[in-house]
Length: 230
Image 1 (cartoon, rainbow, N blue to C red):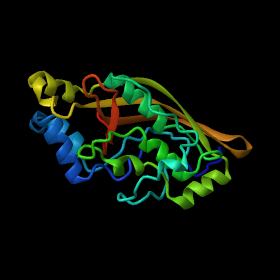
Image 2: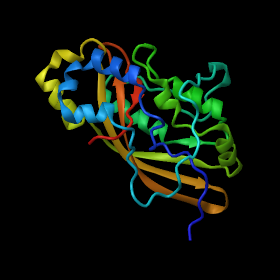
Image 3: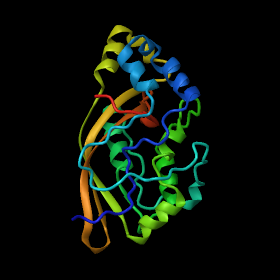
Image 4: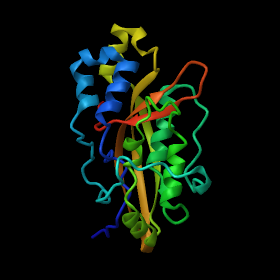
């Protein structure tokens, strides 16, 4: 029987988008989405996450408060990669998903993990839903338990795409996105986990991200959706 260990499972999507942030993103970026039932379900869903069957390790049982502030940059970012200079939404979303699904508790503290993730966020606070991103990181006690087991994870991204409802919305009103330039992208891949004494496993991952890509600027991460849409 495969041994289980506490894990940082980044497919649970935290507590989801807050109502105010969700309204701001939808209204400013793609107001027309409100008229399409499929996208309304995506952006206002009840927070049900996509979890592939046969997962290798359990999801975290604790998560930080949605009001938790990001650590100061002086704490460093440990093994968390710096955001790439990419101006194409799908490519940036794929890089962001790989970052979210990768971690190393052996050489990265929880504060460093949060600081590293925060660097990927848009600086436009009107659109940034930090709570949906920071909610992916387990609470300090669980992170400490994971560190005791030297738990770490790597990720392989298989593909990224615009969900059908999002493409339909843009086709119906292409100008709707030109205020905030926030794109909805779904990414699929696999996360491989390892810990002491040869423990480990792998599981399929999927996440839907809101990515801001203004013309002539690098993309940034705005939010993680409360549920996945394909």
